[in-house]
Length: 138
Image 1 (cartoon, rainbow, N blue to C red):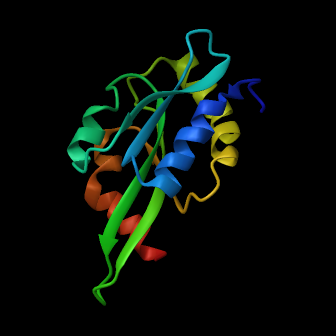
Image 2: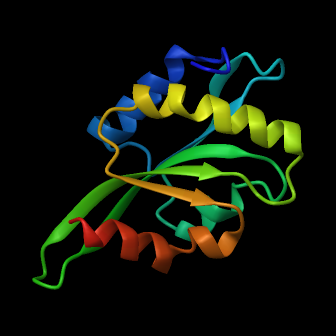
């Protein structure tokens, strides 16, 4: 916890619901107004990846987890939970610094992440890019 930012218990509860309960497709996390705690900003059961991308703000940092489902060449279905660090180039420098130093607190508390994506613009979090990275280790 190098930034001193804590992880709200609800983050872990909702992550468990995504991972085990399969009730959500993705969760978006943000810092609270005082920059003292990581909180759940949104949960969604939308199966549309474009909905997920639309929920990432253009000029504010966020973290997210997404339950990515894909098929291997052998026809087998796979699921991977992908962790996103969304830090757009247009975000304020101070916000990017707080987000970067707070990421590990959240990342370490979410057990079961298999792929990590860092995005500074939407091309880096495009479905094909994420699918390619996630399926390489499947």
